Length: 79
Image 1: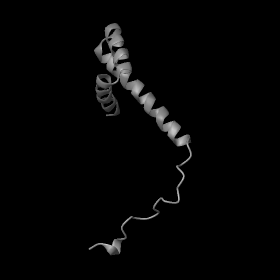
Image 2: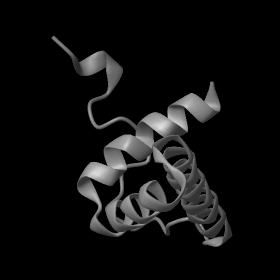
Image 3: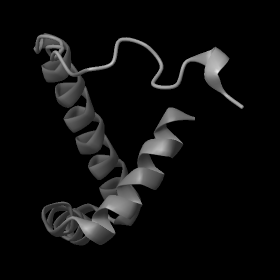
Image 4: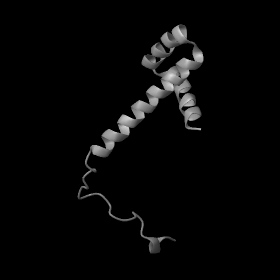
């Protein structure tokens, strides 16, 4: 299921990302369309992994004095 989702995402990404489109077209010419789709899907998975890893290493965002700590509208004040 995950492979299918990544391949679907890769097909969309190839349409909108020029860098991935170039890589896909090059692989499609050399290896064929099916292998190129899976290769681009793998590249998306690697990008996702590193994005998640970098976000986890970053400290949580600091709260400012103007940030609400509870709901903006209290539960009892609704009409």
